[in-house]
Length: 447
Ligand code: GDP
Image (cartoon, rainbow, N blue to C red; front, side, top):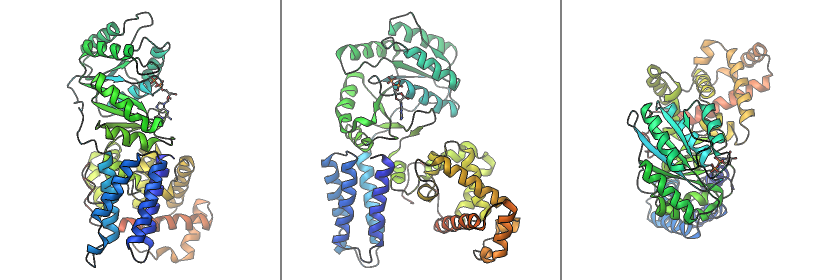
């Protein structure tokens, strides 16, 4: 089961409970059973799931809840909190500072996605204004240097390696000297992988670490191994003083939930997850926003991060003001579509916006969604300014308006109606956000 599916099942279980007229013990138990089944199937440890359910039942004592309390909200919040504490490693990891040189060493088994992830990591920080560089200290796998070189060239990141030198320690040292001289502030060392955890691999890691004194050692792990992640993360953590973990291949694998919870159980901070082969398919991992998105609640912090990357600084306060003042006009929807289109990988951005993810853009159908949004925008181009700025929900009850927009954009009346339905759905959702204070990073309590 992929994570999107897990999230879908959990939020459906919560939704079903919400639909029940009365929430009693039976309804709560059915809801928790369904959530537990979904978590088992995503390979999460039995013990963890049991603990979670016991805790929720303890918190949500239905009989004790005074009448008038919003039981549904309390239960939803309890599920949210329990999932968060299940995944929270409890301590942050080293974080690179712009302009302050740091060395990051990547370790992991062959095939885990280490080389791909090195470039994704470098690219992530390059976009934030860092000056990253990549060193290939993997002399074990033939073709490792070529792969890193190719990835780095595509992303326009300086790289260092050798086709002839067989000593990874020497390459790492030379690379470090080169990039220190070039004033790079994030020097990333890719080490060799091997097929299994063996003494030679750990010894080589120790030697490279001794020669480069990394500020952080990142362990890259394949998310499709599920609960086996626990032993692997533990072994690497002990042998290579691993300070953070990146879990890859979280895009299409049944065991992603298992890997994540298993790593969390080792109390190692997961800092990023890989969600595809492309350089952009890489997400910062923070527990609360992640769980929030898993439950279909949207990820405000991630969304605001993206907004800050694409919306000019001077327009940001205005946009936030407009989004939260409760008047979601067609023009605002149009502007949101424009932002989404310029914010890059549609699927990642959409899943961050409360309300947009599930219906307008079902997972795996991003291309169609993009075409749909473009279609919506061409129809909106045929509207008058007064229509775009109107806050009157009945405005388009006049058939002649709908027909005029359809004619003007060369679309059918049905298409225009579909677009207006989408607008109504979003407007309803955003009206609930009226006066909402957009939470700061990591603080989802306002949700
Ligand atoms: P290394 O041997 O650990 O350096 O692994 P590579 O970087 O060569 O990656 C192994 C394979 O996994 C390649 O085909 C990558 O494209 C693929 N890969 C890496 N990360 C991800 C990810 O997050 N999702 C998916 N679907 N594939 C990935």
